Length: 372
Image (cartoon, rainbow, N blue to C red):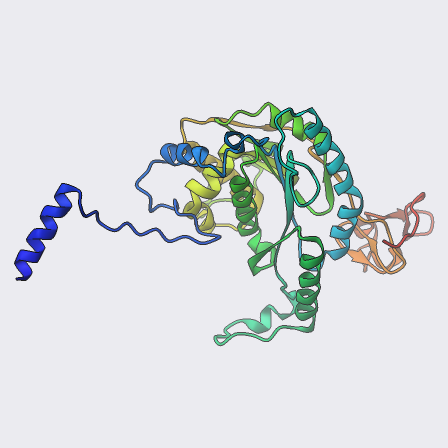
C-alpha cells in the first residue's frame, strides 16, 4: 500500500498537480531573500520593483523621493526634541515645496507632515546602561534593568505615543551595534520605495535642497553611494578585514546617501550577508557600509554603481545650551567649566570655547542660554 501511495504522489508531482512545499521564513529583520530564494538578485529586484507597494507611481501616487533615517540613542531626548522643533520645520518646508511642483500627487503624505516627497524617523535600540555591561557577563537567565534603563524605557514609550516618529529596534543600543541599526534603517528605507535613503546622526540637519535635487536625478538602475568619501588606504586597524586587508573606500561623517537600488541590494537581496557583518572582522559601521557596497557590485552587475563625494549633505545642529546642560563637543556637562575634566582645551568644544587668557572653558560669545 505504501508503495502504491508513493507511486501516485510521484505521478501527480510529475504532472504538476502537486507541487513541493517551499518554505520561506521572514520577519521584520530577516529578509525572505537572505540566501534562500531561487531567484537571482536581478530577478528579485525586478519582482520587488513591480510590487504594488514599491512603485507608488503605478497606483497614481507621487513616488517618495527621500527617506530620512536618524540614528539616535535612548538618552538623546533633548537632541530629538530640538530637531523636531527646528530642523524638522526646514525639512517640511523643502518637501512641501517639492510637493507643490508635483502634478500627480494624490496622497496627504507622511505622518510627519512632510507631504508625499519625504518620510523618515528616529532609529533607536533598547536602553543599555554602559556602567552595567561588565557585570552582566556570563549571566544565563537574564539580567535586571538598571534605574537608568528603566527610566529611559518609560520615557521612550511616552515619546513613541506622543510623536509617532520613533522606530524601536530589538537590540541593545550600543556603539558596537551600529551596523545592525544602519541595516534596519536601510531596510526600512528600501521598503518605503524612496529614491534616496539618508542615514544621518541626530546632531545634524540635512541640506534638503541638495538632497531632493539628487533624488530627482536618480534613476531606478543607479546604485548611488554619496557623502564624504574616505579612501580605504587610510583605514584604521579596527576597520581592516580579519586577514589585515585594507577597507574599501567608504563614506565618513554624520550623513550619507544611498539610492533605492543600492538599499535594496544591501538590505533585502543581500540581507544575510549584511546582517552577518562580523565576517568582515569589525563592527565599524562606516567601513562595513563600504564593504556592503563592494559586495553589492559583485551580486548586482546590472546596476550602475556610483561612489563619490557629495559634501556636505548635512550641517551640525546641536541643541542650544540650557541652564543644566551644555555640549562640550563629544560629550555634555552641566556647564562649560565642567567640560575639560582634566583634558584642558581638547575637551572644550560644542557650545564652549577655551579661553587662553583665563585658562578655562567658557560659553561661546553670542550663545544664549535657553530652555526648550
